[in-house]
Image 1 (cartoon, one colour):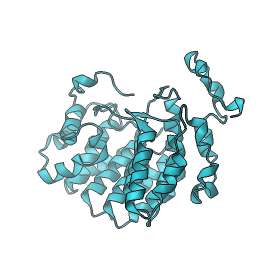
Image 2: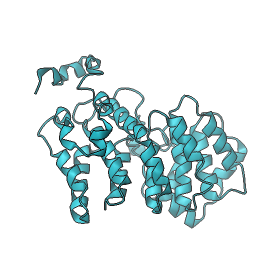
Image 3: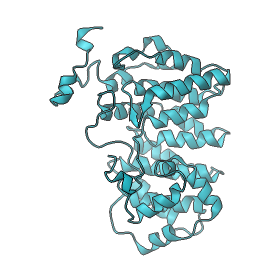
Image 4: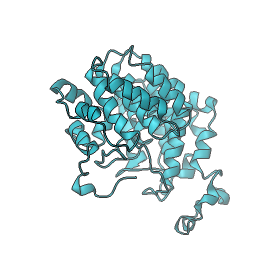
Length: 329
């Protein structure tokens, strides 16, 4: 390997790792430099996997190639092997963002038997673990605000930024999935889009148009939560904030829009909770809606089972679980 492309761990310890910003050891730069011809053509041998594998080399490209198989067993096994390499004990590996554009393309490929699993993995490596936290400050936060380090010693904040920018770059593919006949794929497209960094205002605007034509309650709720998560990290959350206010305050709206919008609204500022909003949040939730919302990734991040109830408890001021005293971000 070129000596200039060897990560010096001492720079992590002494805080001078920023010298690698914008170089071939910056995964943000490398992912952004992968051309459409490489990504669309699955030219996996042109991706510098080994540059971000700190230890024994793993056949990431090989697993991605196998995941394209039309044989479900082969594709599923390859994707499971890949998932084990990309995330370990809540830490995302340095090479994970290199896989995100290919995972999105697998999700968008009608011939792929692992479409849902590919989208689920893309979202999983683009969003930090919440470790049971569902407070106003943490519930819709996507990634750490400051420096963080993975199990492999690489800059995790660079990893999440690279993955999230890859999602934004392929937003057209993901937005196209909102018209897919499979509601699970529509839901998972929302989950991935929620992590996008860059053009998030335009993506959120596109999501806000969809509830009027979306017939499935879980997907409608996902559209709201995805738009709000994007707004949470956008410099101007105003349009989404106003939209959420319109949804939760209208008793004529379905509960699968009103309740997620009310929960999202709490996360978009730190103002005292208005009585009218608290009333919506404290109203009984029927069993059908509870099952729908408990199954959404946003609530599973907080707790499995009973994610909805635990998130509501924390949003309304309840403490995070005692086992997780420190916030994740």
